[in-house]
Image 1 (cartoon, rainbow, N blue to C red):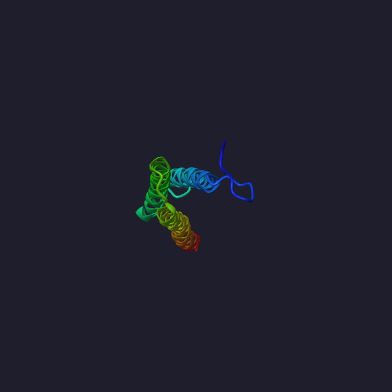
Image 2: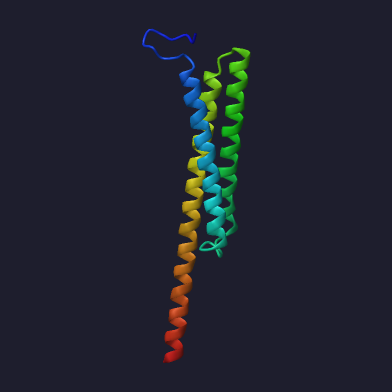
Length: 131
């Protein structure tokens, strides 16, 4: 019979929710990396190489989430608490995902700025040629 606290909640519920969160964040991180690679192959084709930083950040976030899940499972098997390590891994994954989103947004902005300057130069050259 499973132990429950006075509220009827299993003491394993926080671990299960933490594990699910790490699974979802790993999937989100891999999706972010995939989106970035897709954009690099299409609309960010001429973006500076810094755009690859977002891919790296998303990939590392996914690896952190996987490592956190492994640590969580190992701590459950050994019967030790892993609350502080889970909090640390959650913070690291959050920071990396935020950095990935920021790097991708910065790359889109930089590519848009260089595209706007190219368009202005092209339209100015066309106007000069027409004169």
